Image (cartoon, rainbow, N blue to C red):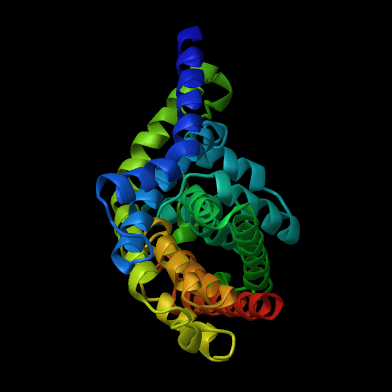
Length: 337
């Protein structure tokens, strides 16, 4: 255990040194070794790419490791126990917050949904969790922090939680349980004994390492592709070009961006670098946040998978309520910023 702590401390020192020298190293590579002239489109594109890829991967590795340790305290079973017996509004708040730190992917949507329903957790509370978990994940927050700063990351997290809470509450108040497939309520899930309390600190560190291996291995290619697209926009799209399409003056840009984003399939790793480049070229913050939330929060694969347990009216209500919430957020931030 002592060796692990020493190794982690050494790696953290190395991480800090490398992160703080990235910009100087990028300047050295682009302008000295490759000898590109400053202020040219090609130099700007290459500099953006070489700087952003390692920066984002470094941030992602550190945060995923920390979140992996935190997640070792929150298995799906423990999450169900925490939410079990909670009243609607309190449950919506807790479910939205737990969605941030609980492991989730589209393929786990049905098992989690079945487990929540079988445990007696209200439908609206279940949906608060299903909305928050994919939308406000550590990959999205790390990329937003790395590319835009902590204020934007906090803004995204806060609005995402608000959308999850309010959408789940509305779904709960509408009493849409009749649109859940009948067989769902007949299932008795098998409850396994939770082992979180028995995991040692060494085991939790191992969980953090495994999270890095699993998540970074899955998303690094999307990060590289997303940053490559963003770099192209950064270097070659004229300044303020996007203002006419996604700017504040285009009143229709928010709902249209949400409608375009809903059927798209991407994850935070692929979409956020593109969002950064769009903002640089004149797109408004509210519009691009609405676009990003619709792509990540209303994932087409998740919606298709949920069709196995939900009837069409409930799916349409889910997409419609969350979509309206995202549009309101988009317009609000276009007014503020």
